[in-house]
Image (cartoon, rainbow, N blue to C red):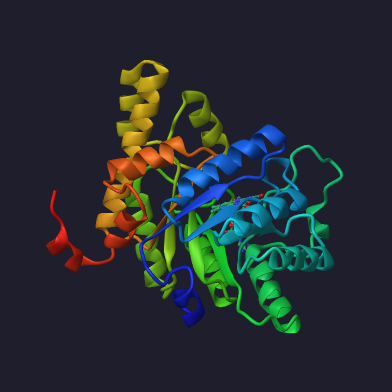
Length: 316
Ligand SMILES: Cc1cc2nc3c(=O)[nH]c(=O)nc-3n(C[C@H](O)[C@H](O)[C@H](O)COP(=O)(O)OP(=O)(O)OC[C@H]3O[C@@H](n4cnc5c(N)ncnc54)[C@H](O)[C@@H]3O)c2cc1C
């Protein structure tokens, strides 16, 4: 791992981090700030803010980044290259850096769904690896006094467009070779898929931190939406059986989703995951419940995970 990344966000692993999306209404913005306040108590290594997905614009992402950054948290704004020129990407990077961000998540993005005029062949970058290379070039030309930490996406169960899973891993490696510092995965419900993905990365010589993306199911409607958005994510029978037992009862579904995600997190931590990234959907409840199920009540508990000698001092 490059020294800068090790000394920065991943100085202490496992990291805990949260993902937010930019709200479109004042009510949504107020609710997000409340969520940020609640989750801040756990002093996450970083919080990331999505871009473009769901129609969010660069201004919305930048506004959230500014507010969150002002609240003392390190932000990782996302940037996608679909539909953008080099100049636009440079502008976005500049605005993120001006907002105080020192890291960025570099993604290709997905083509806009309802825009028949969109012509992908006109995109300046076809793949995220080219975006990573551009960001490194930009920061050099811009003579930034720091090195941006760059995250990229990984897909434990395969990217839905890939027809060749071996080649897909080579494309992931290309993103790292161009200068990415860490991988954050697509959400998954099958830890074996994650462990196998991590092992495949290590076989390819990727030693960078691999952060596991976790999204607890809180409603059945949300689960169906998630199944569409995170195309390719597998829903294991064990999870589906538990949900069937709940028979559509809202409270039971939420409890099952949170318990399932808690078990996933516990196993990931036992197996020395580099980090856990919660897809929060701008809400704090499920994430806080998971923390509680893991026995983590505040930041000091998070910190203790790193230090076995703390066990001597513990008394119940
Ligand atoms: C953690 C995470 C956060 C995300 N955040 C956002 C967000 O904020 N906004 C948003 O719009 N989307 C977001 N996405 C979705 C993402 O943009 C899409 O999944 C997109 O389809 C893939 O992005 P990528 O960066 O992995 O692309 P790439 O790495 O470019 O890969 C896309 C596809 O192209 C293939 N490929 C890569 N390189 C080559 C090559 N040289 N030749 C041929 N094929 C190649 C890959 O195997 C893959 O199938 C996120 C996804 C994840 C996992």
